[in-house]
Length: 483
Image 1 (cartoon, rainbow, N blue to C red):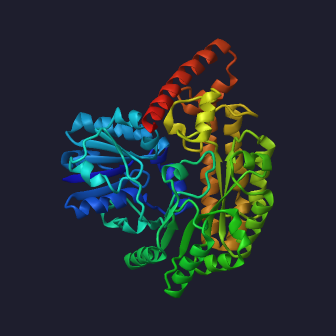
Image 2: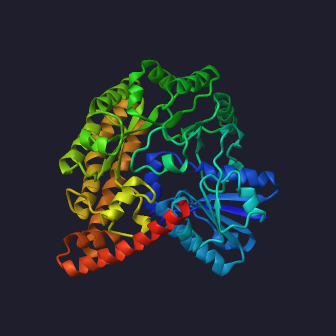
Image 3: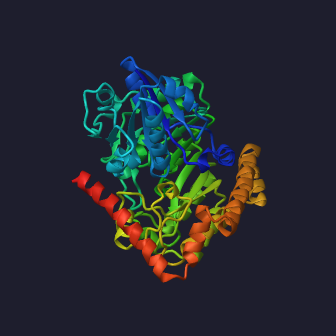
């Protein structure tokens, strides 16, 4: 059979300005899940292709004419696009549609309204039986892989959209469980691959000619001794790439040997979840780190030439505008290479989502807005639009021309140019959104701003009641399935 995997992208992410911004942020890469499942199916004799809408246009007219099964990978923000594609496929062809991924796992009944079958959780042990018709359940519960070394490596030969950086996952899950995190719950319990398996995959990417690599683990440095061993072997076997990205935690600053090995292995770009400089806010999301931890991590990264992406969460109940701006100023003060201001987003099946549903604080049921760049709930200390404005203020305050020149002097011209590109696209994107909020009545920005300013309590109550019923129904269906 002809099998096609699609990772959809929302409308805004398919636009040239967003793709340009992505080019400044980093290199094109591809989600590993479809590439792993594709290798399994290819081994069974199927013809498989994989596409990422974020990275390139997809010729659906051509695919509809030859494809037997479409498999859609969903996150919450791309779920509406996945449903749109699934409905179009059913209308224009006889192909089957299978939907899986994070959002389908949280809301399987919702996904099933658009799919022939839904796979929840990890799909490696069930994908072949679903494709070949041996499993016919409408909702298929994936089986967690106990031995991660048994999982085949991603097959990049089946990827049909651009990719410049290889992704590798050496673990699944995370030993920490921040209240807003989805992956630590979907991929529980926390598991590790053997170091030998990891190195074998890294060798493969070197042989394939990749110049960039990403460790996609939720926390690559969770097990510091294991991270050191991987770095040592990369150094000893000359398996460094031009740049390798990883997710870490502030506690990595406690280990000077680890920092030195990360630098020598060219793991020189890290995203750290700073989240907030308000200790009460950090404790409320169960971050298990202190303000001093954050400061030490910033200094350690700068000392070892590791480019820090400072991730902060906007809209925590214990934070106000000053707390947000203090976090942005801190990221600037430690010469963070990039800033990732993430608006608190209540993803389905997380404690934050459950709490906000109970409190009637979610203000939209448009999943495409659940992307960490748009406000989807009623904040505690400001209006929804005021929080949205803080997001725009954060990117404009951080990405400035003087900061681009400074980053260029610290890390080199290439990185200064990338920072300058992010400066231009941040200003342009914020400007367009703010204009739309004032003048384009059909835009989400306009609705958010004027929802915040609404004085008609009767209309607002009607909106909230309708939304509460919709969310409660989704919540109830998910709970029924989970039970």
